[in-house]
Amino acid sequence: HHPHQFPELHQDDDTYDAMKNGQALLELLGRGDIGRWIVIHGHKHHARIVHAAGTSSSPVVFSAGSFSAVIYPQLQTVARNQFYLVTIPLNNDMGLVGSIRSWDWTPAGWIPSGAQGSGISSSAAFGCRDSPDNLARRIKDAVAGRAVVDWNNITAEIPELDFILPQDFASVIKTLSNRYACEVVLADGHPVQVGIRK
Image 1: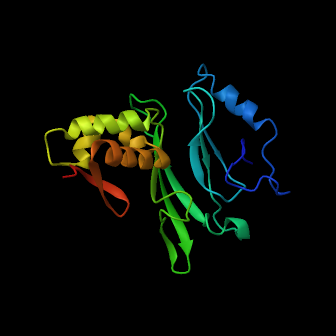
Image 2: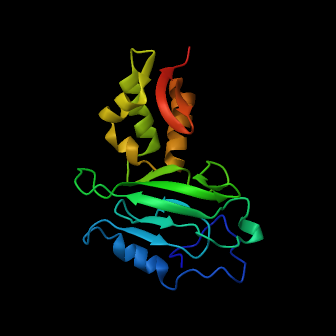
């Protein structure tokens, strides 16, 4: 069961049954004195990944979608049956970080997850705690004086970008465009280059 409520789901639904004392559990895990945590749960069929409310040590909460459920009508536009491969590198200087690859079930079989209506996209990540505004500024500084820079060169300089939440990455792209006139070139939803808009 989910340890905290999903604001985007109908909370007046009788089936909306969050874990009893789930928020207390997240606060305990987020104290910072017992390591970093990821909480993986199922039950709601709605896939999402967030940092729990609280301090900078709050756990990552990964709500895994279902593998083979009949999806409720109210979720059919935002959820698919999915499966995941979660990778957590143990030897790094950034703490608890990781990546998630996901696949959607379709009438044609399992395919890499799409960005819209799937919950977790085909490649998501977690663990970066830097703000999207600061990351956008750092990317702008890395691009300064050059028309186009390969994304691999950017992540070599700013490795935490490999572990940014999908919703934070969307904010980084928006800030780069609106504030710094930088555009991120995507291929199949993955960044490949950053360039200065002329």
